[in-house]
Amino acid sequence: MKIDTRLAERLKKINPSSTLAITSKAKKLKSEGKDIVTFAAGEPDFDTPDFIKNAAIEAIKSGFTKYTPTTGTPELKKIISQKFKKDNSLEYAPNQIIVSCGAKHSIYNALMVLLNKADEVLIPLPYWVSYPEMANLCEAIPRFIKTSAANNFKITATDLNKHISTKTKVLIMNSPSNPAGSVYSRAELEEIAKVCVSKNIFVISDEIYEKIIFDGAKHESIASFNKDIYDLTITVNGLSKSHSMTGWRIGYLGAPSDVANAISNLQDHSTSNPNSIAQKAAVAALTAPDDFTTKLCQEFQRRRDYLASRLKGIKKMSFTLPQGAFYMFCGISKTGLDSMEFARRLLDEEYVSVIPGSSFGRDDYIRISFATSMGELEKGMDRIEKWLEKISG
Image (cartoon, rainbow, N blue to C red; front, side):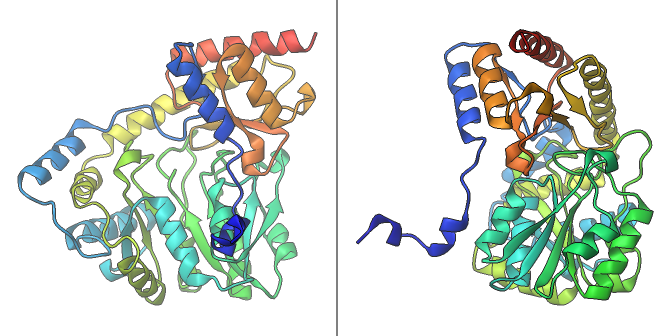
C-alpha cells in the first residue's frame, strides 16, 4: 500500500502552516537562551482574572467534574442568551445557543452542517488562517474577495456581488478582524446583509474580538438588523480574547433553530460537551462587570498608538491603523522581500518573531501582534528599525 493511500483524500487539501517553521525556530532559539521578542502571539498577554480562576477552583472542589449537556449547561446558555440581548440586540433562546470548545470549534461546526461538497465559501482577504482550511475539510471551495488598504481591508456590497455564483453558500465575516483589525460600520454591514438576503447566502459572523475596539468605534452584529438576515446568520463569539481565556477553550454561537439543532447533533458525536469546569468559569466571566475587559482594551489601544508612532518613522514599512483586535498588518513590499523571507531573516538576524502575511493570503505583508508588554514592543521595534536600515544598505 502506498503511504498516500493510508489517509483520507480530504486531508490532501489542507495546506501546512506557513508559520510553523518560524514559530518552531523561535521556540528553539528561546530554549537555547536567546532573547527572543515575540510579535507573533494570537492571545492577550494578560493572565486570566482571579475571580474567573476562583470560580473554576470552586467548581472542582464542589465536584462539578462530570459530563454536562452536549451544548452547554442551562445556566451558561441562559447567561449567553442575556449577553447577546444586552450587547448585541440579538434574541437567541437558550436552545439556539451551542457552547463549544472555542470559537474555532463553533465556526467549524457551523461550516460542517451548512456545506456540501463543492459549495463555495466567500472569504474576505486577508483572512484568518483557519477559514479556508475549514472549508477545505468540508470539501467545499474557498473563494477569496480581495480587499485593499485604501478601504481598510473591508469588502463592500459591490465586491460581494461580483464574487457570488450559483454555488455560493456561505460568507464568513470577521469584525473586528484578524489580521487587519478592520471594523465594519452598521451602514457597511447593512448593505452586505441586503446582498446576502437577496441571494440566500448564510453568514458566519466571527465576533471574537468584539470587546477589543478602539477610537470610540462601535461593534455591530449583522444578525441584529432584521429577521431576514437573522435567519441566515450564525453569530460566533467566545471568551478567549475578551477575558484572556485562550486555554480554557470556551466558544459559543447563536443560530437559527434548525442550524443549532444540526450542530447539537454533530457535537453529540464529536466532542460532546465542552469542559465542565471551564463552563463554570465562563459563567463568572459573563456575569461580572466589564472592568477587566475595559482595562485590557485601554492598554491595547495605548500599545497600538505607540506601535503606529514607531512605524510612521520606518520608510520601508506601511500600515493601516487597526480599529480593533491587537494586530498591526504591515506592508513590506518596499523591502523587496516576501513575507516568509522577511520573517525568517528577522528572526535569524535580530531575534524578533513576526507572522508572515502569506498565512493570511498577502505575501507582501507581515502581522505584528501588540499583545505583549510596552518594554517588548520598544525593544522589538528598535531591532526592526535597525535591521531594515542594515539590509537597505
